[in-house]
Amino acid sequence: MPELPEVETTRRGVEPHILDRTITDVVVRDRRLRWPIPDDLEQVLKGTKFVAARRRAKYLLLDTRRGTLMVHLGMSGSLRIMDASSPPLFHDHWDVVLDDGRCLRYNDPRRFGSLHWLQSDNHPLLDHLGPEPLSSAFNADYLYNLSRGRKASVKQFLMDGKVVVGVGNIYANEALFMAGVRPDRAAGRVSKDRYQRVVERVKAILQGAIAQGGTTLRDFVNSDGQPGYFAQQLQVYGRANQACRICAVTLKEIRQNNRSTVFCPKCQR
DNA sequence: ATGCTAACCTGCGCGC
DNA sequence: TGCGCGCAGGTTAGCA
Image (cartoon, rainbow, N blue to C red):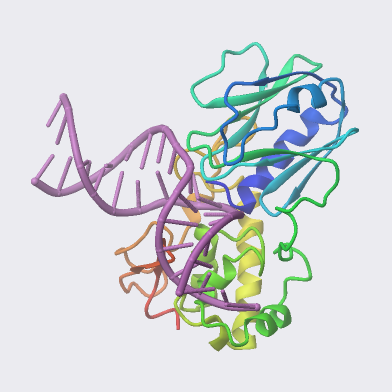
């Protein structure tokens, strides 16, 4: 599910409900996520107050006065604001109960998500991450210079979190289509002008998707339980063997690193 | 350093 | 109906 726009949609939805709220209880129903939920989480969280809701890459950083709750949604996770009294459903793995009778409730069927407790921002999972795609550090010079000599495809390059964070399979496909760049071209053989287009398209598509509340394919819901609406604007993702919306040529599907890639063999070179 | 593979999980749709 | 297979929005560890 969640790429950067979905995580940012979740952050914005959750933020106003948790700021200045004190945690009165923590309920963990299943600790087996991508990494086990820390044994002392309940004890450490109870009685402290949320003071900020940030995002780094696809991690939500929910700051309290004592430290930071770091949440990842994995492939199928969602984080919602609920009445704490509402009965938990299948795969509702944990709640953080707030002093207004509501709670943050985490659901994740595949359990690829995670929950960490941080005493600072220096967590191993946050080290070595590339720049945020919506920041000025993500620009054509940066991509061009970093990509020289790289034999991996430009799509794999864009999806590498050490290069740039937050660009997952959907938006990598979409951005390369919009930029007119073939996803299987070696990253080191893409010109600076073309990287300029890639950068522009990545930023525009991520911003557009955030404005639409993200992309819901199967199970993404925002903090209010509502789907996102960007799926209606996808140009290539999920449209293999259908007509290109620009030139009507049949869209081609290949697999790169075991991920589905769809592109237009005429519009993308 | 770079790059490829397997691994972590559940659910769903499809062909037989 | 049921079953096996392939695939799904992510990311890391481990090995060439």
